[in-house]
Length: 167
Image: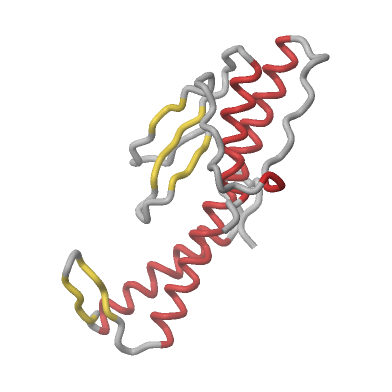
């Protein structure tokens, strides 16, 4: 099993910041979405409890079963000043956060599209609530279709800040 690239970026971010050896102005946050997926970014979503990451902390070692080829080589910082290393780490952190945001949007887009397909193609749809499973009424199903179509429009289109969106 290979480790997804989106998960390697945050680890690289922490490693690069530790190598830089100085604090930068970039803040990185970690949070989990409703599906339990961990996300990293410069700003947490509103209404979500997020943890500010200390990017100067010692990096988490990669899993023992991670293939060597999946890890990106560290940039050569031997000829850089402390300020140049800090700037390189800051840029890498911003890039990693942007890639993590994009991967999160793509996953949310795919989930919303799949949910919409299931809701539209099936007259009877079951919903699990805790330990209970029940069939949605026609009105609930239509409301779920509308909610998922809105999610598709939001998550599959361009990002609100204009940096692009999921394909």
